[in-house]
Image (cartoon, rainbow, N blue to C red; front, top):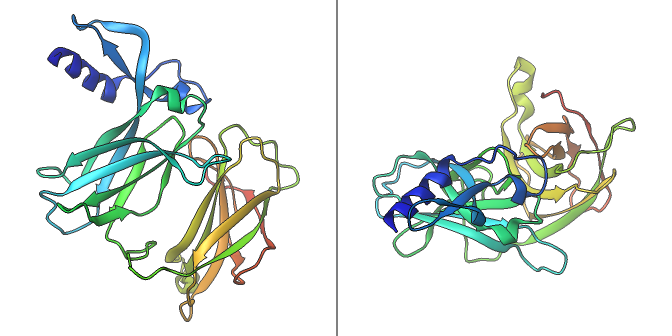
Length: 284
């Protein structure tokens, strides 16, 4: 039994199918190979698969005795009210560095027809209270490694927890590809963000510091331009001297940028007719 467990652990971190091709997440996730009592692999018999994750923890806290939890969710499908938890990994952080790699195991049967999984996590104290949270949800499409950045609640891009319900508003619109754009490849997705920018440093060649107010993700498989989007965002007062814009980015299955809106559309509040014109990305 001990030998079998050791071989499963090795497969978790090092086994990558050579035949992995673009397709459902089931086809390209790493496999845990089940072994018999003599330590020989049972060919063709896979029960669970793995999602590799790199963890980066940004805090000065002493995390001894705290736990890290990473979740893999099946995205919301028609008829579902919320995402379905597919797998979860939990480890004690005593003696762990602030940056390391680990994996989340998910059932083979659940991932079979999925093109991506939603990944997030939290760091919990001894009372299971959230101490650190992920800066944002990430998406895994069968290749590469998910990068999870853990920050203090209330840090840039996050809202501190509160017992008082936060009032949310809604906006919606459409994003348009260039008229000569070819059909998107399978696995493409679009991220729409509501962002507060400080453009004062741009005149001297600097970058614009930003705070992400809200974000939504749209799977574009089998969708055609224009792409509809809806977003909920917290009721807020824009910071004086800063600009609030709505922007969108389309990426392929590997997270490479295909199209984006470089300037952003000025935020006009709760409206239903936002129009985002996307351009080809300069990034390779």
